[in-house]
Amino acid sequence: MLAKNRILVTHVGSLVRPPELLRYITATEQAVVVDRNAFDAQLRRSVEEVVARQKAAGIDIVSDGEFGKFRTWSGYVLERLGNIEEQDVVDATGAGRDRSLFPEFYAEYFPTQSLPRRGVPIATGPIFYRGQSAIAHDIEVFKEALVAHPNLLGFVPLVAPASAMPRFRLGHYRTDEEFLFGLAEALRVEYRAVIDAGLYLQVDDAFLPYMYDVAFADRPLDEYRRWAAVRVEALNHALTDLPKDRIRYQICWGSFATPHVSDIELRDIVDLVLRARAGAYCIEMANPRHEHEWRVWQTVKLPEGTTLVPGVVSHATNIVEHPELVAQRLVRLAHLVGRDRLMAGTDCGFAQATHVRRVHPSIQWAKLEALAAGARLASQELWGR
Image (cartoon, rainbow, N blue to C red; front, side, top):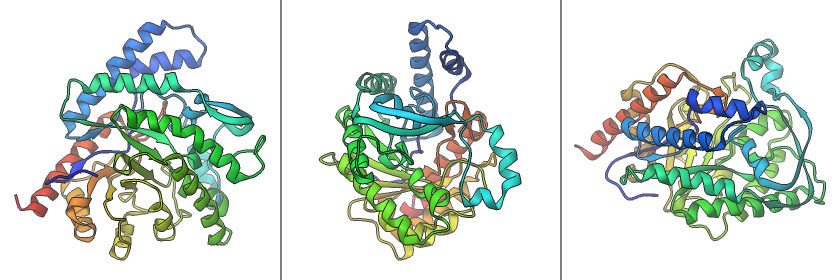
C-alpha cells in the first residue's frame, strides 16, 4: 500500500470513547434534549485529542476512533440507508455452535456486554443511501483534527455489505443476490466519499467469518463458502472504480472475549478474503485462537501489489503484549510475505460499540504503544539499523 523502509503502524479503528463524549451520546439515546452545538464541539475536541494521542503512541495511519458513529461499528449504517426497516428488535446475544458448547459461560457473559438492541432488516423498497450529511460530517471533523499533524495519514472504517446486514429479509427484492447488490450500490456512496476526501477506506467485515459459527458450523463447508462468495462479490461491486491502493479490507472473528472454538479456519476462507478488491488485508493474528495461522502464509501468496496488516496485539485481553513478542510476530511474517509488504495492526477494535469496550482505556493506549515499539524492533532487525 505504501513505499517505506520500515514497518508502518496502524490499527483497526474503533477506540474507547471518552467519558465527556459518552455523556452526550447517552443523553441523546435516552431522548434527553441536548445542545447540538455543544455536542458537536465536544465531538470535535474528542477527535482532536484521540488523533493526537495516536500520534504520541507511535501510530502512522490513524482513525477518528469512530467517535462519530453511534450504536455499533456495523449498526451505525442502518440510520444512513433508505427503505430499510428493522423487524423483531431484541437484545443482542451470542449465537451459534460456540454458544451451544459453553451455555453456562454465555449465560453469564452476554448480560455484562451492554450491547444495543438490534433487529432483522427488511427492504421496503430499493435500498438507497441517505447518510450524505453524516459521512460528510465524519470526514470534516476527522480532517480538521489531522490538520495539526501533517505527517499522519488517516483511514475511515466503514461496514461491508455482509456485515451491514448479516441477516435480512428480502422484502422488495427477489433473491439474496439482488438484495446484496442493491445494498452494495448504496454503500458505494459512503465509500466514495471517503476516497474523494483523500483518506484511506477500511471496509470492516467481521461478520463474514463470524457467521460461519452462527449459521454454518454444522453444515458442509461448501454451503458457507457459497454464502460468503456472493458477499465478497457484492463488496467488489461496491468498490468498482475505486483505487485499490486506498482500500483496506478487515476481517476478524468477532470482538467478543468468548471461546471461539467454532471459528472457521483462515485456511478455509483465505482465498475468498484475497478476492476482495483491496490494497491491504487486515487479519486477526494475535488472538490465541488464531495466532497459529501465520503459517497460512507459508503457502498462500498475497496478490501482487498488496499489503498484509496482521493483528499483532489483541483487543481481547488486558494483558499488554511485550514489544519483543510483537516484533517476533512481525519478523516471522516478513520472512514469508516480504518486509515491504507488511504493516503492524491490531486484531479488532478496542470498542465494539459506543458503550462496549474490550479493554480499559489506559491499557488500550499501552497496547498501541507496545505495537509501535514492537514495529520499531522488527524494523531494526529487518533493515539492519
